[in-house]
Length: 289
Image (cartoon, rainbow, N blue to C red):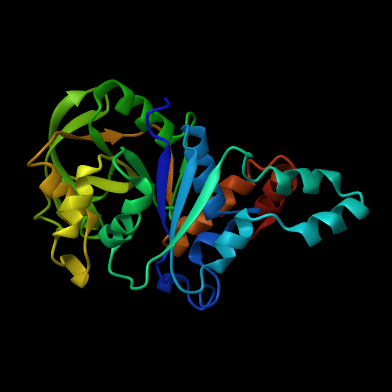
């Protein structure tokens, strides 16, 4: 712990799979019960020892800034009404020692470009990247597990999980050899290979720890899959210069970039919610399907 202090949150995407809900509100602000996805992601970073949260934003993402900002009028109203519990939860969204930095990605040129936008803020230090779409329920958090591994190995690390062979076209897929428990040495990585052409079924999900060398590589990359600057392509070049590890994190991932994954997360988190779980469980049992 303590080596990784900065995390990049690429949040400039359009969220087209959730339109029209995301027409004027960021997909990262979609709630899982009573907290938006971006708050779960921020809490995971803080649990891992991160103190600087760097949000790479785009048009219509102001709600993210507002969410982490102080809401004077709302807090004053809650205080007057004696809503102390809610007031405490609002004031505790971020600890006082956490800094939020917002950088505008003027054009949606891909995940690699979003990471590159944060170069001046990150500087010459290792850093994390978290995609809020990937909600990972884990204790310790997935990023905390990876930060601890970085403290031991001092290598770039990508979070991976086994995906269905027919789904490889939706992921960056790694070719690896065994290294340690749940840990692999990456020997190759390819963006969205067709089923049958993938080197494995280990798909990269939205957790990365990267070294600052990646910035030079991203800056000199051409466009890749989808006409975008792909982080996967930058990592492929990083492999030629330094060791990169793939870690099968312990925990359950919900793909909240898909409607089904989002609904699964909502139901399962509601079934664990201290105030809702009993009533919600009874409601589900009473449904006639």
